[in-house]
Figure 1 (cartoon, helix red, strand yellow):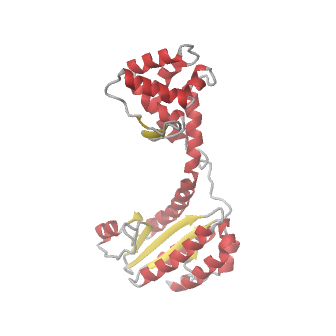
Figure 2 (cartoon, rainbow, N blue to C red):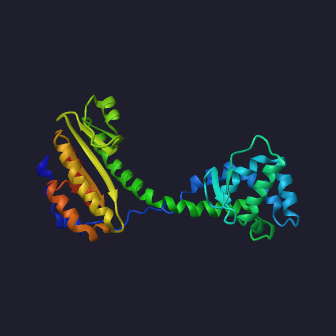
Figure 3 (cartoon, rainbow, N blue to C red):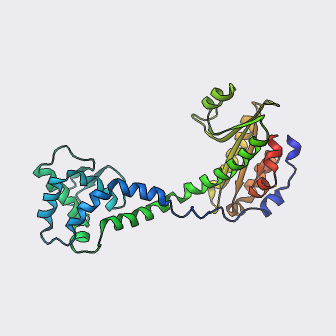
Length: 295
């Protein structure tokens, strides 16, 4: 296997991919639609309050008749927590709120939820018609909050790209099998192979087993569009992981890419040399290096 890793570090750096953003990277519209559908009816009930002059009276009547509307309150403020603790800056009293549908709405709870609406600015937003429709408003919030998931999507896209290549390899080589998100337990259950763990609940992006050579290969996958100290730490961590796996006669391959490595090339170079070139990028993946390595 080792003779497959004959590419140079210079080639690795020259062929880094500047993006893996696909068209579905920016917004997960399906997830947003699902989230919105769960509360759409309750948001339409709250639409009744838009422009109401006697807002407090109307609010308390509405929540008395439809207590389930409280579950929508967090998302109106772009949060997802079902419970929230708030401090009164004057008295320093802590007020605990629950946004799970209450079993019983009494006058005390109606007042408490009204204070929440008033103090957080939601009353002003709705009463003074600063929005026209709460369904559209929450749709916009969901889009904004979904952008926070883009970092995770980058990792998921990178994994999905590698998995597509693994699937093709397995389709043409029936002696090859793989597991995504592989743990010690899952590996034993599928292939009856015992491995040691360096971390509790260590989860490898992929584990590949060559039945002919009885070789187990662990693959880690990531992508870095920007630099930072994390890259140096990651490179150092994978040197240790390489040692740990090699001691068990387990192969290690690191698939990584992204122009972020330009700022941490020294750390990556050290790991490249240390692991005897067991680092490949997407260009090398497309050139069949992974397949040659596994087979």
